[in-house]
Length: 406
Ligand code: ADP
Ligand code: ASP
Ligand code: MG
Image (tube, rainbow, N blue to C red; front, side, top):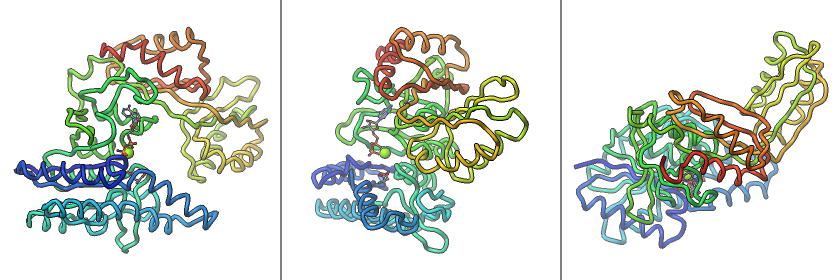
């Protein structure tokens, strides 16, 4: 008998009929002789709705209260899913994150899982139940409710699969798997059959929100293979696993897009040791996540430093940037929203050349201007005007022959 962890995302449990669809799928899996743990998200739109409500009663709700509020979204779904299974003649029990034994750090709204003690899950499974666990939430050692960051139900599923040493972890969503690019943007994007952890990690952390990036990081660290597939059909999905030799033959696996970015340029920064450190320490203390950083060659003792972040972050830290620029005696600060990032990802890049040339050529021929470039061993990313990101995605997708699976 196999032990399976199945995670159903917001769209898959988006209304009563879909919850009943999930209940039927889960029961069918159990009837095939498997033990099943199900992790569910809040119904689609519920988490966003709760955030909106919070803003209507307070301009600055505390992170602790946000966690208490947001955790109710998943709590609704676990009860409804368990009820649906029970009404179909199955045996299901719902468990909150705390009841499922998910212990986290105390950083509200982006807690890290520190331990899982799945005692109750094991007990209920042994009694023949399906366990329905609330995704995205846990509790601290002191019993405070925490959440794991947006998209965190993916992390709950992977972490439970790891703690239970499950035979398989299946992430059910509203697309057939991980595609070569977001299928909503590039209609001829193709489903990827197998992808390495590192590739999906780069894609997820550069805008492909099909999986939460922290969940892929966790899966890689604890070697949890998983499959991303659709809850609306029985097609095989995308297997995510450790790198193997065959996987290196493909140079570009996929393209990811990140919108709503902003660029800051600090001009005439004194070119002396410690200046960049002072600027970026101030930003780190303000908890800003900085993405691409470019520093120009120094001309007559000063240099320009540009960096990107999400536009939401810029709204919050604009004053911090102005203050630190004055302190280091830099020149003007230029802030620009409306930019986006396109990243081309593939582990085959380590052993193949020419990827940058192909990317720059196709964008140039299409009249897309590149504002910044950054690279890693398996990724080339370019910063563009946001209005050109969809066009750029289609150009790059075609240039690398991704629709044909070259
Ligand atoms: P869930 O609610 O099931 O967690 P998400 O909305 O978080 O689902 O993720 C699925 C969505 O991710 C898809 O509907 C798709 O639009 C988007 N997406 C972005 N990039 C990709 C990609 N490369 N492959 C597949 N889906 C992608
Ligand atoms: N409900 C949470 C969110 O919308 C977590 C999740 O769906 O994975 O981000
Ligand atoms: Mg998701």
